[in-house]
Length: 253
Image 1 (cartoon, rainbow, N blue to C red):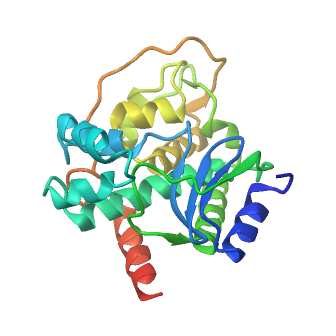
Image 2 (spheres, helix red, strand yellow):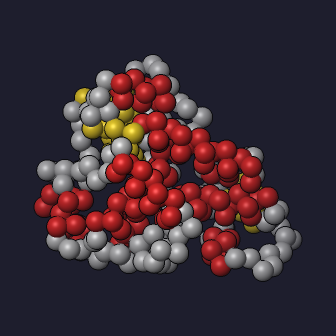
Image 3 (cartoon, one colour):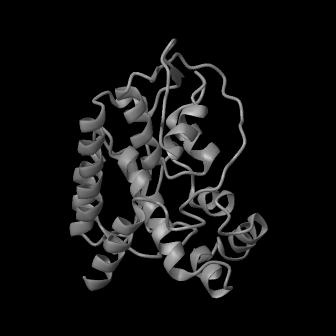
């Protein structure tokens, strides 16, 4: 396909297509013209958010993948087995979907190919209209631009600005800054902390606007410790209310 990713998604939605649309920064999985999942290398997967965040034991996650991955029913297995409440899984999944879509739609690159009939192993939890995905991605892009207009912060290795002093930072922002080491990218920091990537981007752009963080040359990455994620434990996630409203709006369609 030679159209941009957004144009291709619009066309597939109009056709009520089912399959996987692959672009430069991510893959969109559709069912009957709606987005059921998005994957991007720039965001932690749903399994990382659930297991590192404490909402689900790692063995429970892999058991569901092993048993029902081939049948595209991993999400249903998690709910039916009582390992995760349906509402909590849907909200966390919506967050992961919109995070990945933001990166997959960045700069609206051309789509590479569409695989008709391809389905994601997670299954369809809460299909989202293409228009909603595109609108939410634009909203996030505009908000991040208002905070700090350099999109390289989203993808480049990040370093602290020499001599800059951080005082009285909010707890989440301070934890993000602690992981800025000249090596990690926003995606690395989000996975390390098991935070939602979008929230990590917000904090990093605020740190950049405050003169505390800048981009740095990439060097080999090293692993770091994980920490609890509000998406998986408590509802202190500032975007959770928005995601619940989106879910409720989708239910009303």
